[in-house]
Each structure stands twice: as C-alpha cells, then as structure tokens.
Length: 432
Image 1: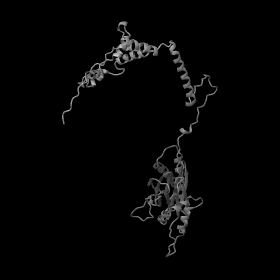
Image 2: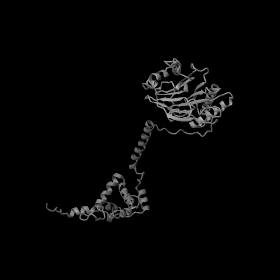
Image 3: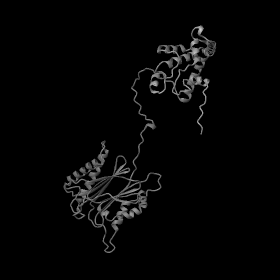
C-alpha cells in the first residue's frame, strides 16, 4: 500500500481555523479569537470617526426594533465574561489545561463597570413603546392568578382581626384519618379446657384456669396437686388462683415486663399464697400465655405441653422436673413446702392452624397425639364450632378406656386438659 497523501491546506481554510482560535498545522497552538462584528458594535459607541457604515446600520435597526436593548445586552455580556469568577475562572483553566489559554480581544471591565452596565441595560419604562408590553404583562399575571385560584386551590389569606377571645380556645383534638397510627389487632386464640375426677381417685386434686388478659391475650393454667401429700387439692386451687392473679396484675400495669419478669412475679405470688395455707400440700404448674402469633410458657414439675403444627408435626415442649435415678412419680420442682426451684420457660413463634395441648400427667400418658395429628382438620373444625366441648370429649374417651385383657381402667389419676387453636386469618380455606 502506498503512503497516505497529505492534502494541501489552503490559505482560506487556515485563516478560518485560525479565526476560531486554533491552528490548522499545529493542534497544540492557540490564537486569540477576534470577533470583528462585536468590535465594530463596541467601537460604534465611540466617536463619529470610528463608526463604519455596517455598525451604524446595525445600531439603527436594533434601536428601531428593540429600543436600544440588544446592544446593551451585548455590552453586558462583555462585562460579565470579562469579570473573573462570574462565568469562568480563566486562571484555573490555564493551570489545569495542557493547551494555552484562549484570549479574547475585548475590553476588560471592572466589577463596578459591570454593575453600571446592568443598570444601564434596564429599559426606560417611560418610553411609549413599553406601554403595550406592560399592559400585556399585567393582564397575563391576572389570568395566571385566576387559574391558580380555580385549579390549584390557592386561596387568599383571610384578614386577621386582633381581637382577644372572651374564652381561651381549646386545642383541636381532631386527627386526620391518614395521620392516625394503624392498630394491628392480635389474632384471638380459640380455647377450651376441662377436668375430670376419673374412676380411680376419691378427690380431684387438679385445677385449671382460662384467664382473659389485656391486649387480646389469653392464659391457660393447669395445676396438679400431689396425691401422695395431704392438701394437694388446696395447693392446686390456691396456686392456680395466685398465678392467675399475678398474670392479671402484670399485664394491667403500665410497666413493660419481659416474660421472665412476669413468670417470676406470678410464681412468687402463687408460692406465697400456698405457703400461707398451713394445710396446703404441693402442686405442679403449667402456665401458657397465648399472645397473637407468640406463645410463652412456664412449667414446674411434670405433665405435658405439646404443640401440633399445621403440617402435622408433633413437638413436646415440657421437660419434667424428674431425676434420672428416681421413679417418675417423684418430682424435684413444685409449688409449696418452701421449694424455690425456678420454672422452665420458653417462647415460640406460632403458625396459624397450630394446636396446643396443656395437660396433667393423668392425660399425657394416654392422649393419642399421632391420631390427633392425622385427624387435625376435623379436630380444628370441632374446636371452632360453638358449644363443642372438645377437651371434655377427649377426657371422656380416656376415662372410659379399659384394658382389653383385665378390664381395668387405663387411667391412674385425675385428668385435666386445656386446648388452644390459633386460627388462620379470615378468608383462608381451612386451618389444617
């Protein structure tokens, strides 16, 4: 391939490029930019000898059409661009650019001269040519105000009368609906509870309470008095009342308490109440707080606390206060006889459609959890049906169950059962 041919640069092209400030032969070279038209306009304001015919014609045309305004704007542009820092900092540009500074052949104006040019550029409003313009501007302002008042909703401020009211005006308590905080209501649990003497005991030493608490909360309490110690029934009833009273007092107070604080205060109240009864024996205790999608529990002694989740999974929550080297009927934690063993507590996040069972040990050994999990949808519908005593229905079946070989009753103690259901929100097809 032959070498590229370098085209000839004409003199006219070189002059045109040079007039724009550049050099056609050297890209790094810069030349002063000269605008002869602007120079002629500026010189036209000088003496008559310096005026040329082209500048005179230009000035006459502008004076006739714009009232000698446009040329003042041109001169004002000279002044602003000449004053450092208003349009551009040419010193900074020269320091940060690799090319030489582009210079303009124009007069340098001071700040005072620039202000004078701005003042001089304001037209004389006494000129009759400005009357139609002013009238048009006033009419346009009136039309704009009318449109703003009609469509945008702008209203004039009412006149204020500085008259002291005869009575102080109370502050308004009205809160717009959009500004009111949204109150999310806790879902309500469906509950049922029952207790039976059974066929093998002479006295029912179990006790239960279903307590409605502030904030749409519900508490389930199950106490089982020890049968081998005198005063078991009195201990169970007294402890159940003390726990219910302690929970009510805790949630009616204005203090923000943790579940641990509520449990400690409630069990302390129950223990003091039982201790005050000289004939009282000892009792176990199961306390469950149903609080929307949260479930809090505290257990002392034995029994059972079992959750059946919506997917049918079974979870036993209670760890009994037993000893590995002792029989199961020996408990190491209880209320009464100066026992200070703390209850075991916990909290769960509950899914809608979950079933909770709190019971004494007379039920936990015989309740068919697997069968309930398999048939949970039917059980949920029964619990949702008003008048269906589901807890007592289970206890009746357990009470009637007998050994097929000997005919003896299968249960060995009093039976107490409390059930809770967290329903699905309204609009769901089912709770199963």
